[in-house]
Length: 110
Image 1 (tube, helix red, strand yellow):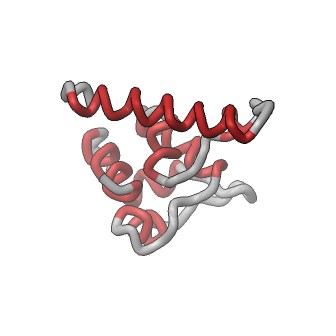
Image 2 (tube, one colour; image 1 turned 135 degrees about the vertical axis):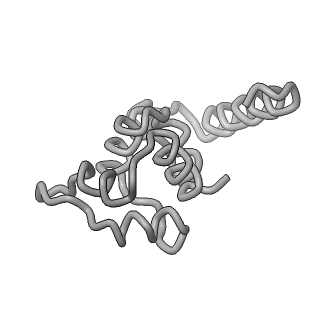
């Protein structure tokens, strides 16, 4: 599943139109995003948005932020604040995540 597909699926499960959801998502300047921009995101014609919009999408669509960041190929900001002590520690953390993720996928706990 792509970032855009996840947004579209979550929006539809909430029975919201693109126009309705777009009106609820505010840019840094306080104005709403356009329905066309949301359409482009959902159709993967744009890169996933930044932290400010991902946070709002996650909250409004009741989807874990971590999931959206994963699909966006980004690390959630709250995890960026954890300072690793070495490159090896970062490598080990990603390997542990990969092992855990693989086990869960294998047992159909998605």
